[in-house]
Length: 291
Image (cartoon, rainbow, N blue to C red; front, side, top):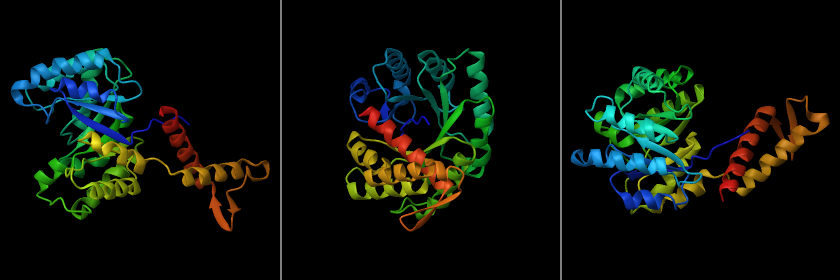
């Protein structure tokens, strides 16, 4: 089983050359070179050229590189997409995806442009329509859209729905859960939203724990100071990995290979727990390989 850790994915303004260069040294799993919210309208052409150049030049090592383009309905989208295709990052992150139609359009343009087949597409879920259509959006991964993941945009969701962003995120929990379910149903990864209050380290940790426990693969970040906490929370603990290895070893014994349930330390453990254990070990090994 091959896994790619996506515990921490950091937004970097596409207009800030120093920030982009610094990203190459940070202990982060992924970097989003942002052409959308972080870039003023008048700075977008220069940022586009800078981001494309940085992605082409490489130097990000094992960090996954995303380019977030502007939304399809904007005047910048076509040029952003063309530049991203030429730069060939790991993924193109598309904001304001509210239906599978947008992903089909992106997939068609990638095909028409002869884009590198390794480029994946990720969709930002940040509108009421996106939440209502989340199953269909995630299901687009089964078509020719290159969809590989979803990213929750809670700030835009709050703006569009008027829901308050409260500690614990009670108003948004049904929406977050729906997104995780859709991602799992259709085999794509999903990243949790950013945490805005950089002064509240404990609140940030609690939200990381909440996202992990809900089933998110990792979290998007807005500051390098959030990386270590995020990596810690979304990494399997040593005791969890040790227990996973024990479960795998017991199910791999010749006398247990055909059993659906075995007893371990007085507990009844099903074969599905062995599958969960294999994923835990695979992600732990992938994280260790990066270190």
